[in-house]
Image (cartoon, rainbow, N blue to C red; front, side, top):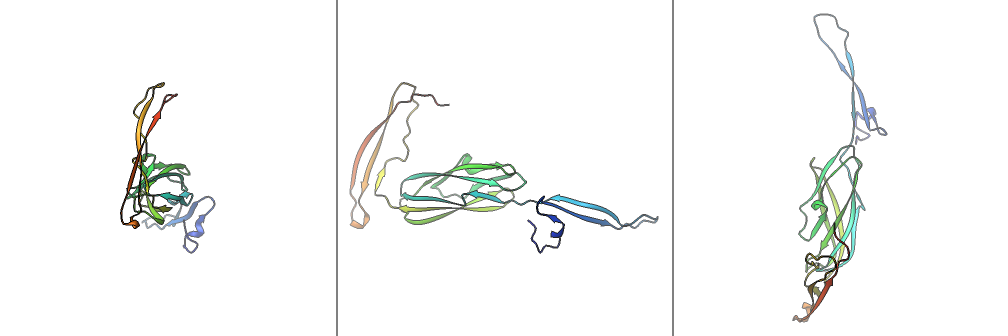
Length: 206
């Protein structure tokens, strides 16, 4: 928006976001014409401000090799439609829907889900700065904070994917849990144990 010290700010109405000032034309013709001619310049002033709700995403305590999810909202606080997208994301961060790309109408809010899967060597208080960019080359930074803990207990998969299962039948999948001793001990010991998970759907998916 127009700053107070801007010389044309006196023509700007901050409540209606309208800028209105006169324009004068001095004409030179071989015959007499009233001069100057006066017209008015009228425009609606807006910006490309994006508001994140919350301003920073606190993921809390997370273990390495663990996937956690949190929701946040983006508010288009302008009078223009904006095409936005998260670019240059770390490989261990995913944003849905549409991989973090969307079109926001004026004053529209849209909710996103962030999935964070910390790498094995992540530890301590970490802050990731995610870049949200618009087609107008406007960039907003969204911070994600996490307290990462090294986890020496691992699962063979962070998700259990069952095959397509008809209603009333049962399918199963195997998952393995194993623990690794701390590298500080000078060696690693792996203890494996397998579990069978079963799923029996009672309702259809649509």
